[in-house]
Image (cartoon, rainbow, N blue to C red; front, side, top):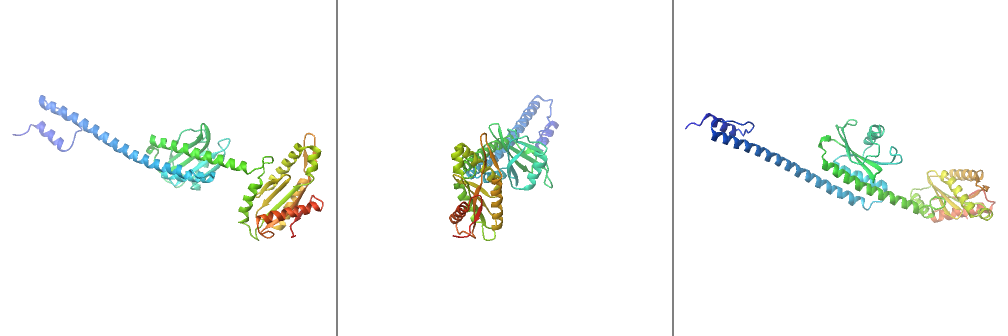
Amino acid sequence: MEKPPYYQALLKDLEKGGFEHRIRFQDPQADLLSKNIYRLRKRIKSLVRDLNRSLSTEEQLQEYLRELITFQELVRQVGPVRDIDNVLMVIVGVASEIMKSDYVAIYLWSDPPSWVRRQASQDTWLCQEIEQHILGKKVVEGTELEPFVIPFFAPNSQEEGSLVMIPLHSGKQPLGMLFSYVATSHLNFFQYHFNLFGLFGHNATTAIENAILFERIQDLSSRDDLTQLHNSRYLRQYLDAKAKEADSDNPLALFFLDVDFFKKINDSHGHLVGSRVLTEVAGILRDFEGPGCACRYGGDEFVIALPNTSMDRAEELAEDLRFKLEVTELLGDDFRINVTISVGVSLFPTQALSIEELLHHADMAMYRAKAKGKNRIEIWRGP
């Protein structure tokens, strides 16, 4: 028996897998079958959508888990690191893995936020682009709180992509910004990406704050309370490090200096004036130290260490310092004082074979300067 034309059309449509149009029939039973097929088509479409959504969600979940594992690596790597510059580089490296980008940079703000205090990056061109097109044009104000993406970012010869920016902030106080160039459309970033970026930024901020706090504590422990110069503890560390770099062609020069008649100043004007004198002397030494290191050694004794300084240059600099203090008048509410110093100079390794010997020789030379009338310099020439 030959099938009616409407059944033939229906079967032909089913064989092709076509469910995109509905066939209407005059026969009530055939029309009911058509309605059921139409409902089945809608149900299949719904199942396909759910399946695609499920597959997409599963892929996103797997990617999210992979990125969380990388994020845990950040916590593991940063944990034992205390130096701020090393912390920044670890953060840059882990951010590169999470975002699958070779171009990541991190900036820390100063006050105001438009001024950069510190930075770390994997590539200089990204920094140039950021400073020229982002910071230079005030695209970033430093007050942003949530991660965001700049689309159609195409620096230099790079493929057009997106610039991901993750604010680093302590509460509402801006700390810095992490930038990452990713060679993909901004449409490929979903909410879970931004959630992860926010989590990453929060923990990166914690690591940076801890490193900054550690740096401040280290700095406080290495400075003299009165003068804010480095103390003798720091001096030993500094000399040990610089001695390893010194040789006969690039010696390490050391000045050991003492304020002349300081006891008389204390007795005549009181300890407050004496402390003021030490603070003023320290200020002059701080301006003088340049690439070297000025320290308060104890009482009215100070030390200046100058790497890569020849004997002739050391003698010239010591005389300049002596003269600078001699002609500087220290003024207070009820005093006017001119102070002088006696300076002993020694070099490592040409005049000393150890740090202890270097300090001892410079100290002995300083006492010889005092014995010869004060307000003068003496070079260590041997016993």
